[in-house]
Image 1: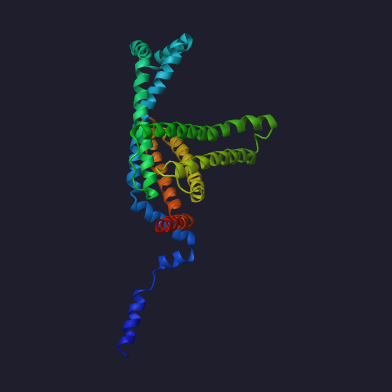
Image 2 (image 1 turned 30 degrees about the horizontal axis):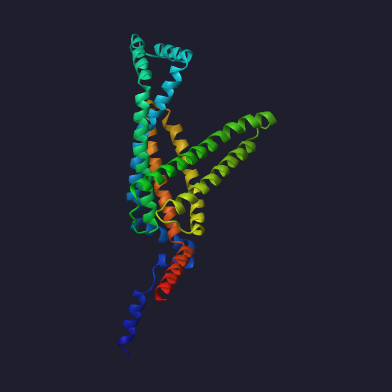
Length: 316
């Protein structure tokens, strides 16, 4: 008897939970956070985020080609604007170089159709690859088994999803950017341009509208982009987390661009590096929000109820 007492005490001390375990039991939100982080790591979240970032950066070149072709079409249809561009190039370029650049501009305008077609094909390839990797990553966070869908059906769905998501992102950025400009015009009309609180009010309103719009987008991304649809209840909460984080990342990215644009080197390399970092952090944040939704208590309860119903139907 006397020899077993200290041994039991040592075993009890060895089984005593650590500080993190005690806090996880005390705070459910911390336990959820840890479980989401573990699920994100187990399901290769960083690996998928890197793949999404790769296709995001890869899409920059064809998008720039499309923008170049659109600008060339605009210049080709507006001779006055084209003459102004050539005059500005001759004034800003070193002596003798302006006359050399004029044929280059004319040749670029003549080849606008081929550049635009190549840009569209490149954007289609990189965009479908980006959307395919995003669907794979979201499905992995939901721990969904792979399903061999038809190639054509998958690509058509990816294309429609890509167009819808791209439009939603453009609208989100436009609302945030136009909110400040609209605030300046409106505040000048009502005579409140000198009050800082009025500017902050319009800024917060624009951010709230952007967060609300992105919340709807992320609900669709988290719950409907995976191979198999999931319960909306847990996805709605995670989408709010993703929308707020996305808005914060947008503001940080805007401040970063303002800082790097002050030097010639920053103007050359800063935007590209910024886009890479922005795409990587956004990808990681979306996948973590999906892991957060997949590890929610209500999601596990719903999954357990579905499994019980399936087992009962099989037993019958």
